Length: 169
Image (cartoon, rainbow, N blue to C red; front, side, top):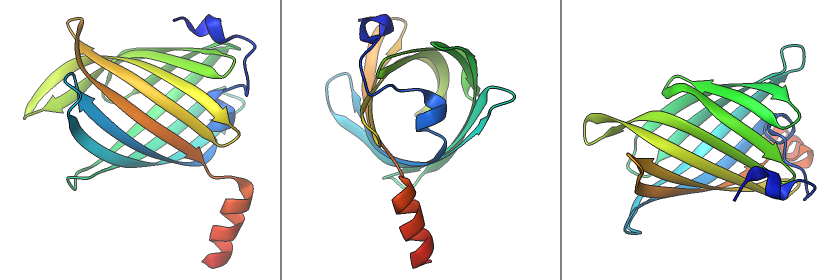
């Protein structure tokens, strides 16, 4: 599967339009045998800087085991279909391709596993379902061998939800 295979399919997914503002996500991580290893939620705040063509995403992870983590992405738009993304635990930068309703991210990340740092490869596929929903599936590998799969459901807070929450206080 290639991102280009989805060119022309909608609704179109661009990172700066979908992730600007507040987004909430729910996710799971399953090991290579399909065993559920982690459940989590993520509160995401995105800010698009039109002049710099950069999206800053602040992700606050809340894991079922009580751990918390923050990741801040700097995502630079290179052209209509390409971005370059960096974060503190990403090795180098992520290559990001965007076509139609799909975004594909490929990157290496430092991840703590049982007290040791592992460098893992991520192949993320994001599929926009409608105006407010994206489903993400990431295959995680080490030395080409599958470590596991992360599945994440993103829900963007629409204007009406934002107003209702503000009114509720």
